[in-house]
Image 1 (spheres, helix red, strand yellow):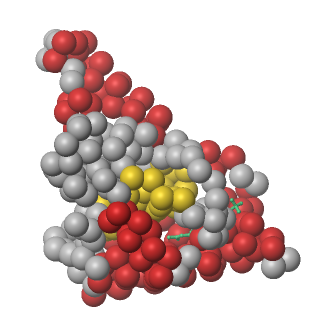
Image 2: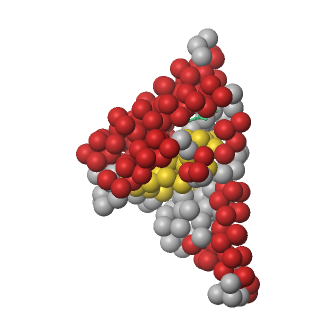
Length: 240
Ligand code: FPP
């Protein structure tokens, strides 16, 4: 069974550009083009959810000019591609700390979300200014407030209640998480959601990642035996 939800940590733009003796921004431009191609490829394969980790909470600490460039790229991307999302019947959503996103980009995000919200094809999620620990901290705050106001007992806090207070509450957990560029770590991405995700690492840098590389990742996924902690392979390759 194909993964229902694929999440990708798009890494290696900077190194790709540096290897070509070009500025890091050149890598981000190519990276955005690759993102577009992979979005279309996933939609064609009828993947239900695709999450792209586009900007982490830690990325704010990069040199100001790179942050500004990434925001400019995002602004341009949203302006240009919102129509494409509509045409491809893709539903657009974001997760992350939107308080830190510049107002005009936030407006473009809200517009894209609103105009695609009834689309019935793939759901495309941009993780922007996203950090899993921050997401979990906010969920804990919300639950603590409910306890304080007397609407919740501490003993009532269980996995499903935590899950329903995450920004990803409406999404299935990722079945497959891909990270490019040879780094083998999650870097504060989907820490809760990745409990049973299959992880796939490739040395390919994100700007070199082709539709074919996506196929390789999916083929690898299809070979895995998913047991979800159980002994028997009751649900091979399908989260329930
Ligand atoms: C990782 O490469 C990439 C990012 C931090 C930004 C991701 C952005 C894009 C793919 C382009 C923008 C996308 C959209 C959808 C507008 P890196 O800079 O960490 O590379 P490095 O590890 O080689 O330094």
